[in-house]
Structures are given as C-alpha cells and as structure tokens.
Length: 84
Image (cartoon, rainbow, N blue to C red; front, side, top):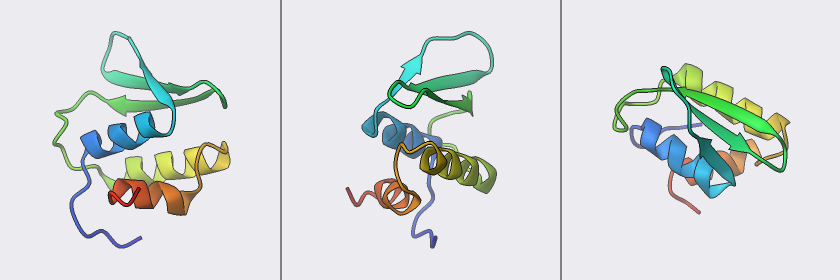
C-alpha cells in the first residue's frame, strides 16, 4: 500500500465504524470496537484522534478485518484513503 497522506487514528476509527463496528464503552487505556456479525474485536490505544497511525496498528487491523471476513484488505485501504 502506498500512503498519499498521513493516516490518523481518527481515520481508522471512521473506517471501523463505516464497516459496522461499534465502539464499546470501557475504562482503561484502550478504545474497544466490536463487529457484531463476525464477533471481531479491535483494541486501539487511547491517543489523540489526530495522532498518526503507526504501521503496527495499521497492518494488524487490516489483517484482522480481512481474515475475519469483515472487509477485504484492498477495500479497507480504499476506505482509509477516502475512496468509498
């Protein structure tokens, strides 16, 4: 994947919500998102929304949503780039 802009945690959260995840209220140092249809859970650190998304989180979430059947990697990347 070629990045044309910095992808932020807010961008990732927007995509997760767009593909059917809901944020689950929690305490602690993470945000929890759950996709009900596939019972997929994504944990993200509590950071300012405009923090650049690091490659570790990007790769992990991309792989998880693809393997769990939430959304294919290519479609996921397109949504992150604002193409859908």
